Amino acid sequence: MKAVETIPYTLYKGTFIDTPELGELRIRFNCLVGVNQQGVIDFIKEQDQITAKYDWKQYTGRYKHEKEREADIQMFLDNHGRENYFNYIKIEDNKFIFPGFIDTHIHSSQYPNVGIGLNIQLLDWLKIYTFPLENSFKMDNLQLVNDIYTKIIKKTLGCGTTCASYFTTIDNETSKIFGDLLLSFGQRGFVGKVCMNHNDDYPEYQQEEKHCVEDIKHLKQYFDSKNPDNEDLVKPIITPRFAPVCSRSLLTKLGKLSQDEKLPIQTHISENKGEIDLVKKLFPECSNYANVYDNHNLLQESTILAHAIHLSKEECKLIKEKNCSISHCPTSNTFIASGEAPVKKYLYHDKINVSLGTDISGGWDPSILSIIRQSILVSHHLSMKSGNNFDKLSLNDGLFMSTQGGAIAVGLQETIGTFDIGKRFDSQVIDLQTGNLDLFHWQLVNDDDNNDDKKLKMLNLLNKWVFCGDDRNCSSVFVNGRKVVSK
Ligand code: GUN
Ligand code: FE
Image: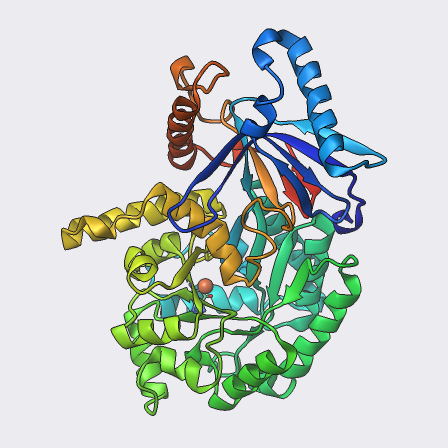
């Protein structure tokens, strides 16, 4: 089991890139980062502080690397104090370390359906493809359950996703198994046992309200007993599927449970016009879709609202007031033709936190790198339609949403999302000289470049990574300081 492996103190040396604030890209070349036995970053020294002391130009070849290593270790010991034993890992030039991606909306149970259901609208899509598959997740079908859950965790980890907020299914026992698998592969994750009690095709779901609160409390105790000491790697998240399949009393119970147990919440909102009409019909006493959730105390700082495509002005105001986050799922929104969410407006005008979701299997692509790309392309379409350049998302916006924006959405902004002292080391090493990318010598960063040239080259390389790269460029992945993927 990955999640219980011990973590040796490790010094990482190389280029660290992250996005501490929306729109801001931080590139630190030749940066030395120490990760302690708890997986927490407790030492950072940047290039300027290092080059001031050592002149690398006088060294060449292998000797240079040995000298550099020696000097780094000396620098560490002088500044940090002694560690009995530690690793030193040098990330070579034209590789860089980026925070692990955070997927804030993904249905692990729906993985077999990726790519299927093109152009069927949401409510029919759920009936035809989704509910029958999800309903097969039962303890008497363990082989299938294990196979699907194992494959989706391995796939997303290999794409650099170190943390995800998952929807499983209504079945609690197999949701526990999903949590076990997260721990065994070492991915940080939120397990959302799906809560719903209105579904004409599945009358047995009407029983849900009787036991869902106990089920979620049980999940919490179960994961608490399985998590490594001092690490909340796996946690339950309260998951009313969406308003049309939940009764008022179920929603009320879940809102109360979130407050009693201090658990986060995830759901869908305003994805599809037919869905919005249905919500109006089912909840005539509520002024809008967001108000349905608010009336049941489900709009909290820890609430993730997936899709949020067709929100009214009042809904945006309410969501901001309550400090909820949106999970933007551009691939899914395109695939099942739900619409284009005005994300730039949400971020910069409404000041709502927006993160990214693959929404497997409304979306076909498990890679958050692809979702960054899709989010930018969808925003270009919006901009072409509106004639307003403002609507275009930048690369930095996309990188922020995929990491620190995601960390805020899952309530872990002090724990993951960037490389800062005190944060857990969830990261991916990106190798640009492999996979599908053809790079040319003048595009590569080298020692003789001045800092401005290096940054300019790195910006172009980041663009190449996002638009031309894929999971082959993700050469290793760390969660809480443990190496969980090595290619
Ligand atoms: N709305 C309610 N359930 C679902 C689901 O499984 N996928 C998507 N995309 N939207 C939903
Ligand atoms: Fe979804």
